[in-house]
Length: 149
Image (cartoon, rainbow, N blue to C red; front, side, top):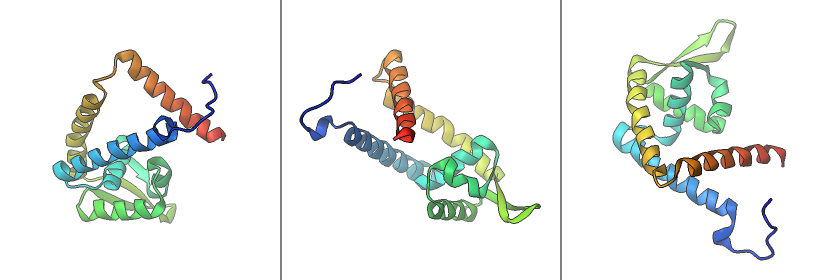
């Protein structure tokens, strides 16, 4: 249990540190996605979600990717315009679409995954194996705690 704080210091405020870290990581990765692969951050998140699962019902992508429906819709349109995904209406519900990567999308996904894993490895190489496990476990616990609050 962490001791209760009695005064406020912004630089020691955990939510602030989490936001700063997330914004910096997100910005750096967005630069990489754009510069090396020609996709936006939302497009990469969708590409990763679809590539990992092979096919996804489009309406499920908002929850899977933690993006709002407008971002998902725009991201899917961008990926479709680039020839990276294919949407197929579902026979049992014509309003719903099954989304999968095209061969071009699969090829891009296969090139991107090693690169983003390399980027992650470079980021975390300042941590020991124990610190890395503690970080991942701590973040998982915070995410679960947020669901409780």
